[in-house]
Each structure stands twice: as structure tokens, then as C-alpha cells.
Length: 357
Image (cartoon, helix red, strand yellow):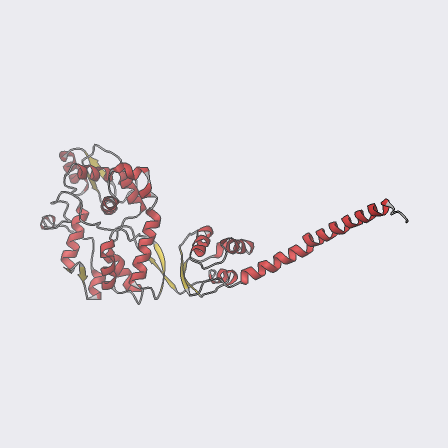
């Protein structure tokens, strides 16, 4: 029997290696890219696994990562990574428009990216720092057709202080419930870390007390550098069980007393023309106003008002949490918005004569 020539096996093995290498290169350089391209095109056009239309808000200045994360959490996209990759690949990430979007069920990544490039059926509303909830209600009811002033007030009355002042985009069909819910959600998102901080714990104050004090600081002083000092004065008065003595709390109660009747915590202002004219922060405070019997009158009652008097922004809240301990006992803000501090009543009266008369 003829023996096999070992050299033939060696030649065959080398040939096999070349075939394997060639096939591998073909797969890596041709087949795999084609498969990836096919899968990518399939994935970006694949319907999302959502089974109902979804209302989605994009805030002004919100990052792509934040948008993608929320889309994933709410089940609007199948892959957060794919959504971001598609936008970056097509240089669309900077073209996303803030607003309110109604996203149909099963919307693909590609279609969703297109939707976010164009204007939406929404309106821009800006709620200012220091506004009270009636001012929020006035703006919302004057712009959004399904938002009623009275219904807004009913929902928001117990949420005073937590209606975060910011610029929002609301769908034209948004209801009072939609608006109030979003304002509160934004408050929690923006302030959550502040109320978990060591600085907050060191104040010895409750979250409700901080918000109420911040609502006063927001109305009492506008310059950011003055706010921690004013907060220090107010906190010192509060902890020493002295009169808070904030004129803003008197403004709060006088406006309500003068312009609307209160019944069962519901503001009864049926005349829409009257609502538009109400000055919710009257400057012409009289001696009689200062003597008004009300738990909100911190000129007569020791302690904080029963609720916040306005909706403070981050600056005012931070000024309370990071208040400046001070020897000052008095302050006043002049007509130019500059706050003047003093240690004694005599010095305070001199400041009144110098800056307010």
C-alpha cells in the first residue's frame, strides 16, 4: 500500500489557512458592515414598543442625554443609545426644539428625530420668581383655552411655594391639572438635591419652613448678594421667637382682602376683566393694613405665615439653606433695590429717613 506524502498535508493545511483568512476578511470587510448597516437601518425605522400616544416635554436648554434618558424611562424609544447615535451621526442634536410634543404610538427613532426638529402645537409661558399662584392662574387662563382661572386656583392653592417659576412649553389643550402637575414636578427636580444636602440639614429647619422663608426672601429683596444676609436676619428672628416683620406678608394678605372674597380656600373672582387688573403686590400699605388681623401678618403674629406667600426660585431657596449668620437685626430695601442693614432700631430709623423718605 502506497504511503501518503506528508508534504501534501502541509500544502493542504496552508491552503486551508489562506481560505479561512480570506473568508474572515470577507466577513469583516464586506459581510459584517453590510449586516451592521442593514441592522442599523432596520433599528432606526423599527416602531417603538409603546402602545399609546405620548405627550412629551422638552425643556429649553435640556441636554440630549437628559432627553434620551426620559424617552427611555417612558418607553418612547427602544434604545437611548441608538436615539443619541442617530442624532449625532446626522448632526441633528443641536436642532432639537424645546416644546410639547404628541408622539404617536410606535414612532421610530428616525421619525421621532424628525418630529423634534420642528415647531409643535404648543405655547410658551414664563412664570416669574415671586409670583403667587393667582398670578400663575391669571397667565395660564389668559393663554390656554382649556385652563380656567378658578379651577387653577382650586388645584394650586395648597401648592403655593412649589409651583416652580420657569419658562415652559404647554400644549394648547393643556388643562389646569396638566400645568400644576408639571410645575410641581419641575420644583421637585430642581430642588431635590438642595433638600438632601448637608447644608439643609444644618439649618435645623423643615422643608416647609425653608420654602416659606424663601417665599418671603423672594419678595423682600432682589439682589442675590443680599439675600443670604436677609435670610440670616429672618431666621434669627424666627428661632428667637420674635416677629418676622416682613412687609411682603402684609402685601399678600391685603391684596386678597381688597380684591377678592375668600370662601373655603377658593378665590372667588368671577369677573375676568377684574382679574387682569388686580395688583397682587400693592405698594400702598397703610397703618390700618399693618394692623390687619390675619395669620399671614408677620408684623403682628410671631412665627411664619401658615403657607408660603409666593413661589420662590432657586436663588431664594439657596439663600435660606446657605444663609449668612449675622449680627444685623434690621434691613430695608431702597427704591433702587439696594438693601441696607443695621444693628439697632435707631440705625434702622436713620436708614428709613435716608433711603425711603
